[in-house]
Length: 135
Image (cartoon, rainbow, N blue to C red):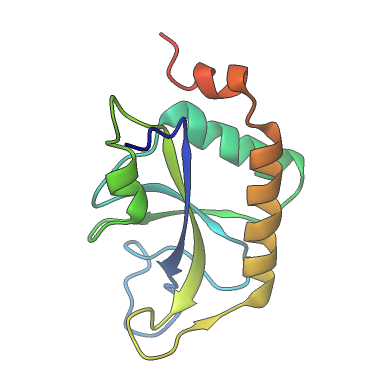
């Protein structure tokens, strides 16, 4: 059985910048950076890990936005239940028409998501990861 120490799920996020979408339920906008999910229908991220991700993005001036997905879930919803629990976070790419044959996204959001994930992985040493669950 795989027992991850932590998890970063890269997902699409619903871009709420189209007519007919309730932006209180889909706050992410294309072109404003990747989203950091504060919760989805299958999980609430570990608060210390979430704050670490936000702080990293802010320190490095990587555009980002906070988002939520009140219905549905992400891969992190399953991963965070692994073993005794796994601190997990979702980095989303705001995308229009996510369940259609093709979606629309901003490549700058993809680039900034990649930058953020690389910087997170570089900073996730053993002590930092253990700090997410230390009591």
